[in-house]
Length: 504
Image 1 (cartoon, rainbow, N blue to C red):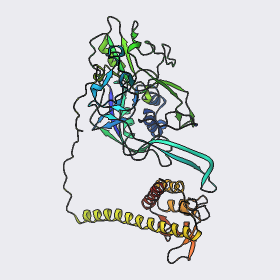
Image 2: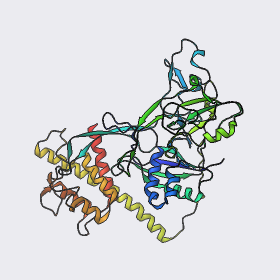
Image 3: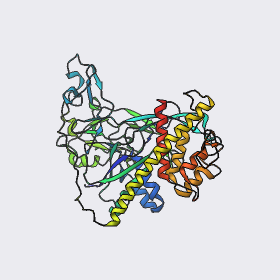
Image 4: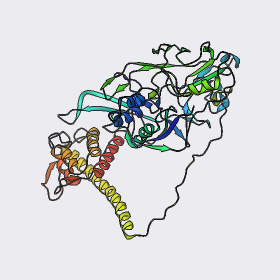
């Protein structure tokens, strides 16, 4: 039975945080993929209140529509979680297919006794054999005191995040009998610029989503025999015959016919547990115990089983929480059919060039083009000028006060400039001016620590004054009481980057 499907290409414009677990103690880790629950939440935030109860249940709770995980993109294709049945000689790092042993087909006992196998557990692999490990970074953060605008005491924490600039591929699928108009409505809101993951109101989470015409459906491999291999492309939340969650794989809970048997010698799984955060309810959902993506399950079927029909059924997902992307499997994948993985030739991304449209020879078009280019160049030039003047003012204050070169606590910190960036991302014009300089809780407050640093002001102002007044002169139009959000954003990012380089 065919399914409705839309493939999304997700580009990270900012670092994105998708917490691996809900614990607040210990080191923070982010997932190396975009969970389907993040896409579900983004769609629900825009549409849930507009849908009828029946429609909302069908879209977000029934599992008939599934928001798949975003997996790494490579050369126009997609990479899948490395299967746990792949092992290698621990004394030699795997470099290509022949150095990887598929114990699903060979078993560890059939190899040379000198080989000590080690399981491949991290990363993703494409059909052409390209190994992908998404780039993550880690940043130490601190809570900001609302009274001082400085770092709060004993509030140090860190975020691990997927680094911006990476691309991921995520499928949105629905059963064939799902309402096509409702499916189109869901996919329509999942495009353009959105915010995903944690700390979306700060400096994380901005992505761009585009619809792709090139599909990446994982079609079942040959299913002529009485055995099926399931490769977990996402986490799996198994259940028993009564629908209750369990980590013990149950043939009835997997939707298999009576008499089916799981071959544990050819099954490779690992588990984890986590409690997903529900932003709407401002609390955690019940804990989920799942088998991790990359697991492999080998099933022997009884005589008389309609294997192709069963494979098509399993390809639509198994287990609980399928609406959030869990339970995606690839049935009898070709990469697991041989003792050593056989990779295909890399394929170039299918790039469709739009037809060239000549620009109309019109004076208005020429004038607008010049204005756009001039505006961008003018902002870059202003940011460069302000940055140099800012550093000169800070260094002059350092010399006057006698602060050592390593002292950084007398001028605005990186986190304070992060607050400026956050304000400029949410506002513009007069609203931004008020948020930065005028309101009771102004971000750049004349009496705030760092902002009150006494510096030499610009010509036409008092000889000396707080840094806040110095910045107002450069960033604001005093007559109209407005600020250009683009200018403020670029300056904040430039100064934050400079402070990061200085610290390193």
